[in-house]
Length: 201
Image (cartoon, rainbow, N blue to C red):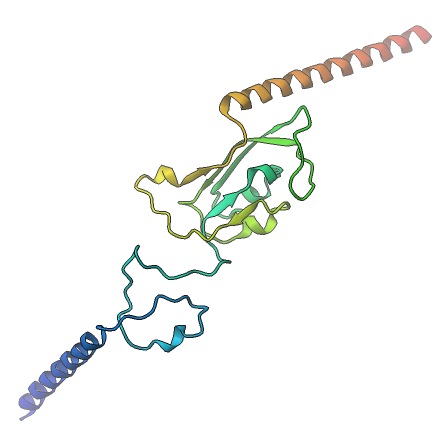
């Protein structure tokens, strides 16, 4: 008697599951609207097909969110704060001190450094947003691009340099020349001062 009861309960459970599946199939003839979470009707679509025909259909995303990073290099002062605060070290920066006036950013900050290397490895990025918070000129921002698949992981490294390799080498050489001239002038001034002091004695 007990085996019969267990058998019937199993069959009953299977029938209930099958009935639930059929109900879902019948309701799946309708399609939910692809609306974003900030839409007033987002939580009032309890039934219907959920899966989108991506990429033909896609859910709208909020304008402000933690998505792909972008650096407006013309506004970057190469302060290195973003690289220092990054918890996963996905930002690589090299700087070269300018020997001449190189302009100002859109907020009026004077630029003193070139960026021969400014790379962001989005494969490492954890989208915490700390780099955008510490950026003093707001040149580093998170765009609304959230879907950027790549076959080759090397393509996930984004380059935001303001110099070609040749230009970077030229700027390094100019800086070295300037520093050598300054060091020479200091040495000459020191020698003159020493000679002057010796002649007075």
